[in-house]
Image (tube, rainbow, N blue to C red; front, side, top):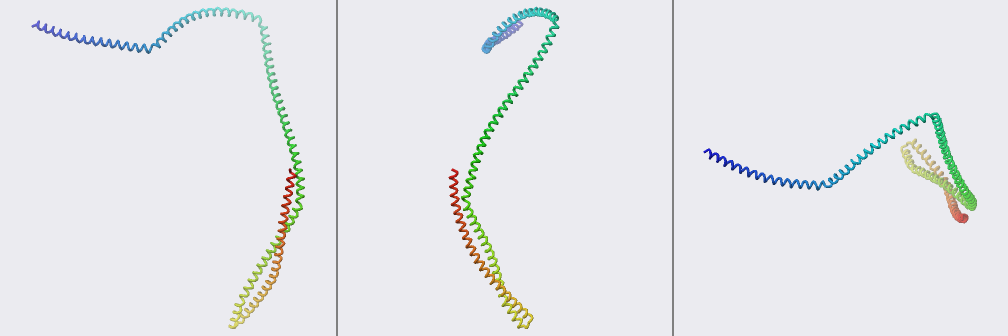
Length: 333
């Protein structure tokens, strides 16, 4: 029984071992595949990196070479610098010693140097004064040139003004001669027109006097006609009132009102006298009106005659003015 258990146990262990081996083989195969995939992917990534970094790698290698060369140059330069610094220290010692010798020598000539420095200072001041004087002289020369140019410009302007004045004077003389000639010709033209203008003025004065007289006579006759019309109206009113007064008188007599009849008789008599006076005034006024009308007609006739003479005078004067204008045109030509 123990052996059977051991056999079964061994068998089970053998089976488990086989299964583990199979699992390990499977895992190993997977691992190998993963390794192959990893190698492939690694190679792809490496190739991609190499493709993208090829230019940079070249630049890096080139720069590294240049840096190495520069390091060598820097080392050489540092060596040369140390050598030059050593030479500079030696030269500095020489310069310092020379400065000491020069200072000792200059101390011997201190008075002469002080005197020379004073002279140099005075010379510099004199040069400054000379420069200042030279600048002032230049300024004065520039001002003189400007004044000379201004005077020349003023002289040119005066010459232009003189030429303009002479030209204006010649123009004024020509205008004066022209005006004198025109005045003389105008006086001649005026003398030619004076008789006709005088006759025209006389005709105009006569016509204006006739017109004024006609106006006065017309206004006077109009006033007389108004007075005559007023008298006729008064005569008519008096004539119209008499029949009524006669009737009232008859009624008063019939009614034996003698006082009223006497008053009416007196009123009728007064009205008759007024009518007779009005008629006498009207007759005298008509006589004066007739004479005024005759005078107005005569005045209008004289006005028409004066107007005709005025028109004839204006026509003669216009003809004479035309003749004088032609004479003026000939004179002006």
